[in-house]
Length: 225
Image (tube, rainbow, N blue to C red):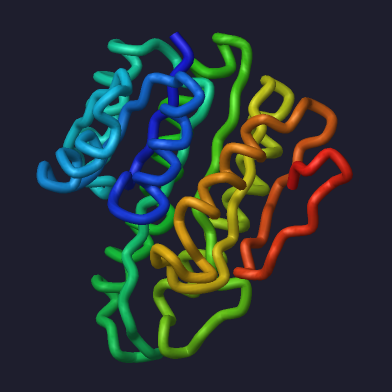
């Protein structure tokens, strides 16, 4: 069964990617830290074949178990999205070392856990797409831990590409250069379309990064992005 797994499927990009995938007929597995968040995402996809599981991305065993539950239900996904992030304002020296490590665990290490756990079954099934939600194309001193985390996501994308491309996995990041909000220049539904476009890129034409700047995207003569 064709399916997508979205880790960090909260309001905004997570639910928009979930509904976009469901619109094209994919079964949807969503993972979020709270049951209320999972319920809200599932409520947005009333006609979809969907499964929601709660897990904290910093709990390695719990995240692996949640991923296994979704794979057991729908089979290996053709698309895996890591959208979890710890977003907060902090400047150099304001966080303890523990707090910095906790932010890194959400922003980067959870992605390593998720991809390393699911990618082998995707490769065995013939390949697919792994998309990581990036951001902060330029670091911002008021968002130190997030700037560091998103720089880590960009590097991680390159490392995952080197590791899994030969197995048929397209690994890319969508770098969102602003605050996501409905009916704004960074509308999550508009951003979700680019996740889907990257997923549908044919082998040989894979992009490793798309920067969503809030500006209109040039269209091809056929009308596609």
